[in-house]
Image (cartoon, rainbow, N blue to C red; front, side, top):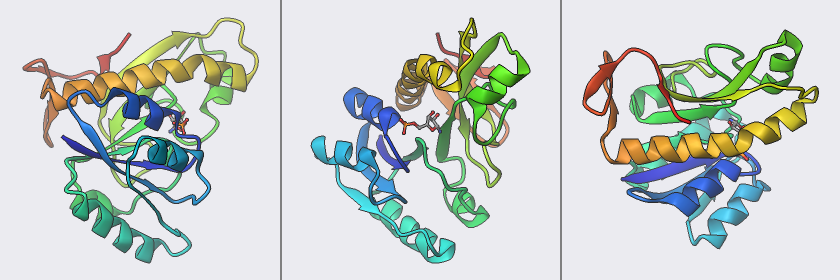
Length: 203
Ligand code: GRF
């Protein structure tokens, strides 16, 4: 399975994927940020990359479509990619784009999820991998992971506690997708050959 990863920054989820690549390979990395540390990581792992100037959304997406098609991509993974893809892109790559988001969706779409968890006094926090549609952090949730919120009063501490679980979640989901143990169409989500109605929980 050939995978293109889209990033905007640090790239720790990308790094987890680059180190994993069990039944799948990262064929290309795309960034809207020319200075993204994740681009350096791609180079270190010998993976080709493209940085796209996103000042004009429409021409950026034209280029994105070309790059993805040239890479003969089976799956597109958004890993810290800070742009909302248009309806055109999600239609062209229908059911082929997944995103990792640091919250237990449908709670806390958008930014500052860790602070929102603290402000709400939640006892649980987590991350979700979901299919991408043209709304922010929206689309069928495939899998989630949870952590307990103990005495973390600081969003950064909570983010640091969650990030290793995010990496585990994303690599586990990629393993399941590449082994065809996690499959979906417009109507159904199936895990291990059975329809499921709730996201898979990854420990
Ligand atoms: C992660 O928390 C991811 O869930 C969110 O953005 C962050 C990206 O971190 N979408 P990194 O660039 O993978 O380190």
